Image (cartoon, rainbow over all chains, first blue to last red):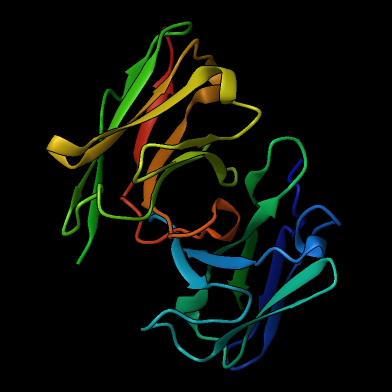
Length: 112
Length: 122
């Protein structure tokens, strides 16, 4: 059971907009800790997609955007493309116990 | 351009110690940043194992803390992971990755190594 909760799967047709949610609690996202998002294409290592809630590293298309509100965060992908089919993970920090970097359970995006 | 590459045995026997190394090129690990390990069991999600700051300070996942050691080998520009008393539950792809600077609470990871599969089996 992950500390950050993501839907197991989402889907959308090419060109559409999809969102992936990441729900935490008062000891992580709700405490103000930043949220990051990673994209993991099949058989490859994760790649940083969004950092500090809404910032894109250079080279990441502006079709990808992130936001944080309260105890949750969201990743939005507009103009969906076949190449976006991948697993997406959110990541934050949890201050409970001794403090720990935490990941969501991951969301499989299927492009229909 | 920073690149990371994991290496180590692909199979470890139950109750033994898993040892992996992450060789870093393009940046001196002694200069700055956190350097971390993340694992992914087959078909499952990502789990942070721990991170080491360039100063040598270490931070571990509380659920693994009693079994994990991460260390820097600055002369070889690499850092290592040791996980003791392994079981089948430790079978996973192990990734090394560069973190950020500042507080651990503000960390994110990138770039990543390609990952190495470690199977715990007799």
